[in-house]
Every structure is written in structure tokens, then in C-alpha cells.
Amino acid sequence: MLSAHQTDIVEYGHDLVDWLRITVTGTPGRRDARPVFTVPFWWYFVAVDPEGAFTTPHDPTATTAAEAVEYLRMLALERLVGRQVDDEQLIVAGPVADALGVDAPSLPLLAGLTDHGSAVGLFEQVLAELGLADSLPADDTGLPYERARWELVRWWLRLIVDGGLRAPTGAGVVAHGGWALLDRPESLRPLVDLSPERLSPDALDRTDLARAIVSEAGRLLAGPWPPPAAGPQAPLAPCS
Image (cartoon, rainbow, N blue to C red; front, side):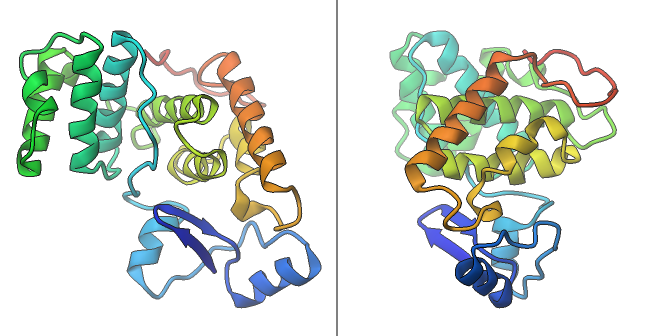
């Protein structure tokens, strides 16, 4: 059972019975159950461990040249790990970076682009000119693109705190695009447990839920990164 508003898609129950249980009794859904989708389109959006994932529904929040370059890097990371990045997002990143003084020969071309078919090529040129293409983390750990996913999780948390990503939506993005694909680290569980799909509808009102998510995102950002697990773990190189 899904609630869909534009690109804000939230799972409210694993099936009709689960949704009725949550709605009528107020008890949490079956968190460990794995839903079975008969329509591949919906599986693509809400599967626990999808090969790809949908575009992050966010607004750019860069206010400095350094933040604009980081924003370009985050879009590159999303493409690297197999998440969809709309051509429009690539184009919007152009004028944001150009207006903030980022120096790359192809950036004005990307900023003024009207033909979406050229967006990817120009975006990749900008990455190369800024030295970002060669700086993306390698896929060299036991989990696919582990370092890249931790960088993305940190970015999503910043978007949540800065208001570029709706808090409940952001918690869901972290849950499906980060936590589930990073072997469910305990350090992210408090935030993931606040995602709407893991709460009964009456657990918190929307305002309190959003505040709780923003607070937890801020707490994670204030600590070491990646956040340490409860038990021993192999150290990762610091995210740049």
C-alpha cells in the first residue's frame, strides 16, 4: 500500500491486511516483512535493495562556490551508484554553480542549455574540468559503492537540515538509498525508524515527525563520519 504525491512515494503497509492493521489498531507495520510487488514499476521505487533508485526530490541549497562544486559531485555520485538523475537537475546545477563563481569552461554552456539531450555530455565535461571525475570513490569494499553511499547519506542529511529535502521524504531516501544498501548500520537506525513507512499513522503528527527527523539528521552530522557502529567495524577512508 503506497501513498504517492508527485515523487514523494511512501509505503504505508506491506499489503492490504498490514495497512488495515496499522490504520485500525495503530500498531506498527511488519517491519521485517519483504513486500512482493507484481508491478515492476512500483518495485523500482520502494524495494529494500533496488539495483537503481528514483531521482532524489530536492532543491539545490548551495550558497557558495565550494558548496556548488560539492553539489555537482553529489549528482555525479548519484549517477555513479545507479540512481536516476534527471537531465533537468544536471542543467539546473549549471546556473547555480556559474552564478556562484565556479570556474569551468563548459559550465556556461551547461547553464544555458536548452537541449536536454546534451546535458549528460556537458555535465561530464564540467566534472572533468573541475577534477571531480577522477576523485569519485572507487568501488573497492565488500559493499557496492560503500564510500559513495556514505557520502550521499551525509548529503541527504544536509538537505534535510537545510530544507532542500522534505524531512519525511528524506528519511525514506536515507532508508532505501543508504541504510538498506549499506547492510543496515545501527548508527542510521534511529533516523530510519522515523521514516513514515515504519511508523503507525498516529505515532507523531507531521510537524513533530519532521522536527524529530531534522533533529536526528543534525545529530548525525555533528558527529564523526561515517558514524561509528555499535560494535567493531572496518574503518573507511574519510569522505571528502
